[in-house]
Image (cartoon, rainbow, N blue to C red):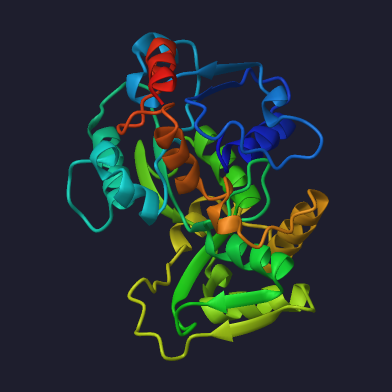
Amino acid sequence: MGYVGPVVIRHLRSVMPSAFIVGYDSGFFAHCLTATHEIPERLLDVQRFGDVRALTVSDLKGFDAVVHLAAVSNDPMGDRFEAVTDTLNPLTAYARSKIATEESLRQLHLDGMTTTSLRFATACGMSDRLRLDLVLNDFVASALSSGEINVLSDGTPWRPLIDVRDMARAIEWAISRPAERGGKFLALNVGSDTWNCQVRDLAYAVAASAPRSTVSINTAAPPDRRSYRIDFGLFLKLAPDHQPRETLESSIVSLRDGLQAIAFADRNFRQSQLIRLNVLERHIDEGRLDPDLNWRSRVALKATSSVT
């Protein structure tokens, strides 16, 4: 019930029409819909609600595959909720949680279990629960709402991107990958070399799709250390039939058309529920979540409401 999940649901249902597919989610962002026709969970057989930190063995019995998407994702949210994201210490809190999960899975020795850790490039593209705290999505929203695309850096940093539709195709490959193709545990970068883009090029590509928008670049900004290009060669070798199909232009168009379909025009979208950190903080401020991102009980919520 996040950003990527609805796209994965739709893709898996289309390629595996007879599969029994179950969703499992805490529901933090369930209400953040940007769909125009239906709730995406309609394509599931069952939607369960629960905290992934409280999964039990019985929750997983009978399933052939598990797609684990749950995360307090991106650096601002990972830093804000670092205590519940992870307690280890490489780079950012979000990265730490992913590394810890990978290492735990690597050390599991379960008969018949094949694990694939998909290290995705930065996500982009339209979804039934769109989030705008991602670089390309932010640029498109800015172009449509204000006609201005403001690049806070000098525009030179590199960002590898991947459309959520291509993420879904990679997930399809991963859940059907035989162990002899990559090993029982495999961690690999997922994306395309052609999607290693500089931030300024992203901004100008968005402006080309929204002709009345302008681009401003902060050429005086200090160097942005978050600049990285990624080699996706192993993914190309192991999954030739599941390579990214979307282009930068097609992702921009899907975002533009999707936002226009919901009459998006919010100049203050960075304060809206389309920014995931805002949603979590409002849940906490209004007493629905505790600081460790656990839903408060109905009794506790009622008591909080009566006090305020």
